[in-house]
Length: 198
Ligand code: SF4
Image 1 (cartoon, helix red, strand yellow):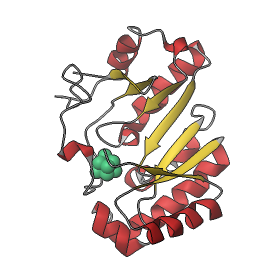
Image 2 (tube, rainbow, N blue to C red):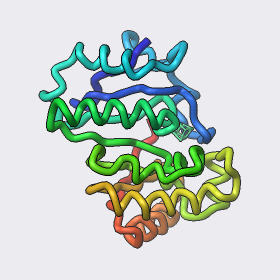
Image 3 (cartoon, rainbow, N blue to C red):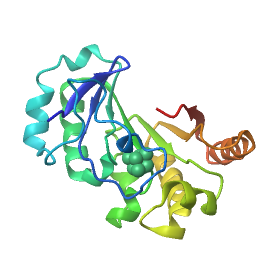
C-alpha cells in the first residue's frame, strides 16, 4: 500500500481512493500507479498513526511541498488530512498543498476550507468546466446540479483562509471554454492553470 510517494520533486500523500465524482478524464480509470513500485490503489484507508509512521521514511524538509492528492478526493478524509497537516507543521516549515475537487464542504456538510486555516498553504481546486451543465456532463458528481455552485462557494471560502488558491481545468475542453473558466477563476481571485490530461 502506497501512502506517501515522490512525484515531480514533491512528496505526495494518498489518503483515499474514494471520490464523489466520476470524471471522464480520471486517471483512476486508466492506470494503477505512477510506476510499477507505486500502486495507488489501497486495500484500505490508512489511519493517522499509519500515515505519520509512513511519513517518517522521508526527510520531509528536503521537499518544496507536501501534496495531499489521491487516487481519490483527499478531503473526504478530513480528520486525517487535518491531523497530518498539523503534524507536518509542528515539525517542519515545508509548504502543504491540497489538490481537491472543491466538493468536500458539501460532502461533510461543514466549512472544510475553514478547517484548513493555518495548516495548508496552497489549494488547487478543479474547476473543470465553465458551467453546471458542462461540469455535470464531464464529472458526473454525486451531488448533481449543485456541484458547480458548491465548487465556487468552496473557492470563496478558501480565499478567506488559505494564502494561495489555484483553479484548474484539464485540457479536454475547448479553448473557448478554457477562456471562460479563466475568467471565473480570476473573478474569484484564484490563479488559473490548465493541466494536461495524464
Ligand atoms: S475529482 Fe479527481 S479523483 Fe475524483 S473522479 Fe474527478 S479526477 Fe478522479
